Image (cartoon, rainbow, N blue to C red; front, side, top):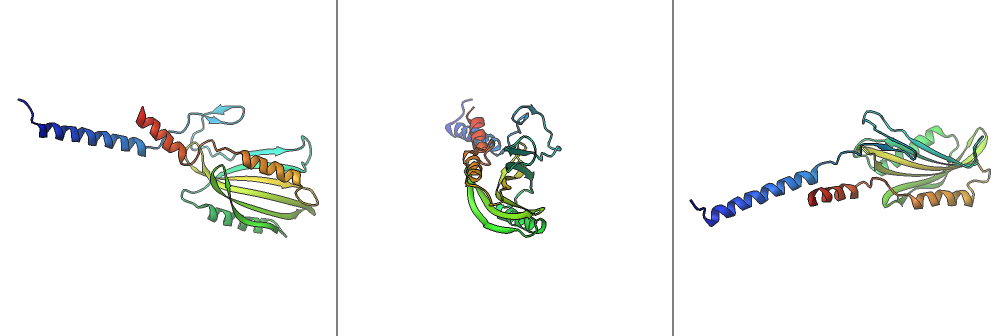
Length: 197
């Protein structure tokens, strides 16, 4: 028995709808995390239950206190938290923990690696010695797509405050920063690759 044109059109429409449903499911699926966690020198498998509290510390000296240091830190935050809330929490913590803090630059909007950031500059005294700090914070995600607060901190122990060379080093690091897992663009690219293959 030969099917009529309406039956064939109906079957084709059903096939197209099923293909669109599958493509939408693939587009909405969260890509799996990379198999391995990478540091500069090695990689390993990190289960989601192991919390990453990595700090990268860069100093000018091998021994003793450094006159200038750069620290890149990361800490997990709750999903849906916004950057301004995190910046205000950071300010509150600084006010509580640092006596006689002096604000040089209040929380200021900035951009780092194409994402929204906040920058703050302040100084205080630690054991009678002046400490000058620049901080830049932004939100990102880890390889398990857990939200992270990223914090880049430049600290100077120069009695006159942060020198122009120290500030240049801080700004150079920030200007060359590239995110390994861009928050939104990687997801879209991964989905395109899945759909097209």
